[in-house]
Length: 217
Ligand code: DC
Image (cartoon, rainbow, N blue to C red):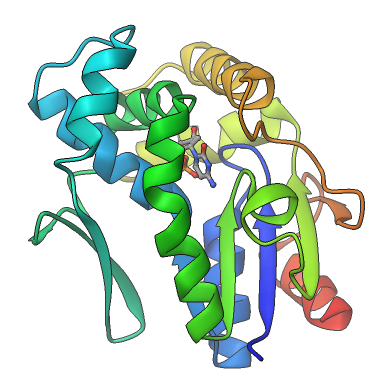
């Protein structure tokens, strides 16, 4: 039997940074399910599929083979064999991922890959529906969040550091819109599993959150 840790929460709550650290400390595999949805979204954008064209997404997702590899502990997402790790980290792809992930067939396309990884390896898996739907029997479930202001501030500072011009109010608005879409879609919306531990990271450091999760495992 493998050990599975599920971390769900809204965009920008620090899930990936924290999940990566917990995975490293426990010698588990880190599985970023958002990256899988982003890779499919990149495929849709390349096919010039419109945000409201569900039917086109349903047929196109069958052509988008998503696989995962690990190089030096880093998850590499392959879209039809192409490493798309850096290409999927744009706002445009994130928005398309949030929209296209509400399509049932898109979610079904990725579900088996996610469950298989968790069956075969000890994993820390992060996303929106891991504790509620993908791995309902996960050994530890965390719901990690932070206020939209704090999440926008973190994103703003990250972009500023990279020298990318940005507008704080627009970033916060995008975060609020994304939360709304992710929490209000019909299939597997973002919500806290009944048996998940709620952690608000607004006033906690990364180390404090990691320590809390390790105590819970
Ligand atoms: O975590 P992220 O920002 O990389 O995720 C991008 C989008 O993918 C997110 O807005 C919603 C979707 N997603 C999902 O529906 N279910 C998951 N388990 C992970 C991500």
